[in-house]
Length: 100
Image (tube, rainbow, N blue to C red):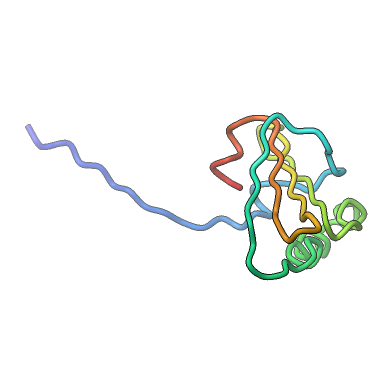
């Protein structure tokens, strides 16, 4: 009998294939704050590929300081750039932590 074998690999999948932009959501069950030592670019500039492919996404990303995404399983994840330069990630379920 042969030994069992396992293959493992990693690949980067564009966020455009993993999530869609939705209207900003202000409430979250979990919040994570990430301190940044430099000024952060506007979120609508970071996620401009969403705006180019979906007109409705452009409307949802009109505020440069907040972006909400819906993952394929229906769970929402919100990014919020605070005035202090921190990035706050608001999540309604724990599962998106692996993507955000």
